[in-house]
Length: 471
Image 1 (cartoon, rainbow, N blue to C red):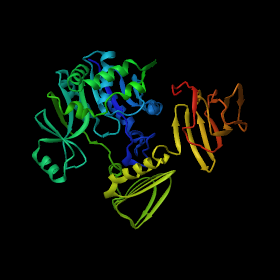
Image 2: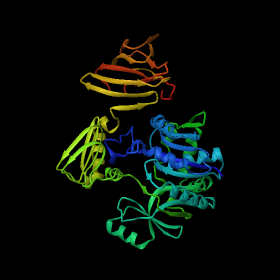
Image 3: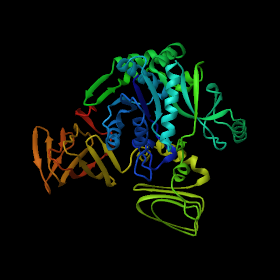
Image 4: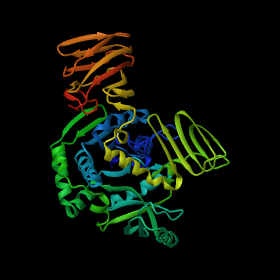
């Protein structure tokens, strides 16, 4: 029987700003061992037996960065597939689409394992064993959730009350006193947000409990564009159809209302990595309780976490702090207020400041760009195009561009003209001119771009043709 792990990769991870941004969300955060949370989720999925392929539901803008992360760790060359959302519609829509896709491709008895992309599991053997037990329940027509055996009362998690393997109820995040009673009773588990079921089981339940979500998801899947390649399937959801799918979590839509839910109690070193305090706890402390990821010197300081990979951070006489340094933003927070970092993210978003959305270095399907400097009416970027990479044919209403090749070779379309440039050569793109840049070589192409104009936002792009499907 086919097993299809489904990695749900969405959300902004606002509590982990400034590393997590809308276009570089929490799953892409690299831990101290160099692996991202997304890569760890992929490796967990790949460790399961009988995996037919690994399906990922994510935003279409994150597809190529996701594929790059997978390519680094997919040594067994497992087949991958993507359902690409134009915007988020919560987890019920994602699960419905995944279930419909798996039923269509592998049959109604195929087993799905829903895995959040931004959680951490440190005991892989325990995860595989718990998944095997969950699949046994799923083969019997049950929905299965994973209950983490709590080692302390925690107010940041939802709880599952169970009798044996039978779920009695799901409980929202409790107060500390209530959580303490839950742990003492031995009947409650943390809700890990992972689920297993046969495609047939989920679709039958959704048809009964939330038929509107199921039917509109079915219509969206049928009306969306598909592409196939070597060990790759891709479904680009139609925005108009997808907008009609109700936005609700799978917990509310199905799990809390179904009468055939089982739980698999387990202890697998699970954490949802919901704050910088949780990230800090993954690094071994020194004798003063300080934890450092990167470059830092701490003097007369205690219980402080520092993450800085681009420059040295010095701290003297501080306690209970979180210090996270990135090229364009610095976070300083009290460890006890780590959850409130999301308020900074929210204020940036409300003000329209792109620092909630983008880093200075932004990944694109063709490579990346880094903003080196910007001021009134100008912006300077370093652009790197991977071999064979090709930007869209585009124009801008408000800016002109000067391009200088630093290394590599470039083919540039400029209006009706096509030019070939090498190191130290340059060209000028006037406002409104259709243009395209591509790297025909076998080495990376590095360029400096100088933009001039009265508006330099990234949304001033009109795409006419794009090999990555963004036009």
